[in-house]
Image 1 (tube, helix red, strand yellow):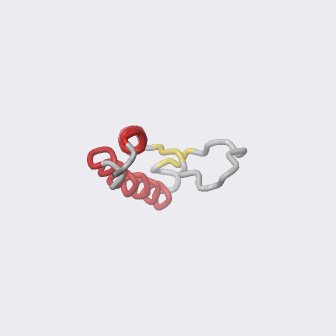
Image 2 (image 1 turned 90 degrees about the horizontal axis):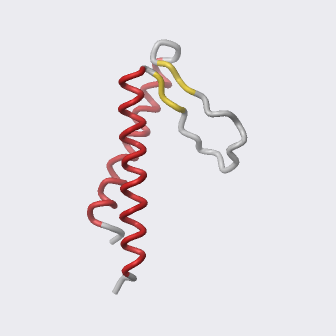
Image 3 (image 1 turned 30 degrees about the horizontal axis):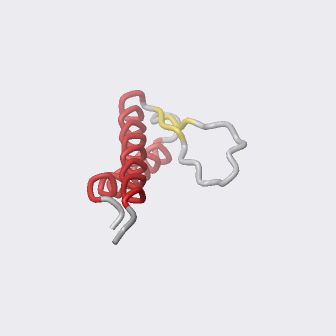
Length: 82
């Protein structure tokens, strides 16, 4: 039997991350700029934005990364941590 608070925490975290990913993709497609996906543990560098006209390949890679992470987060928000 799973712990009830673990399920609540997993669903809340999944919902927040899904919302953040969806909002990031929506703003990127609307404005033509998206923030780079930060994969480092230390966040000491400034947040960089990638423009659709400046670096189109990197822009679409970032859109793809955010869209890819949206779906698992949405599943976790709906189903929970199984």
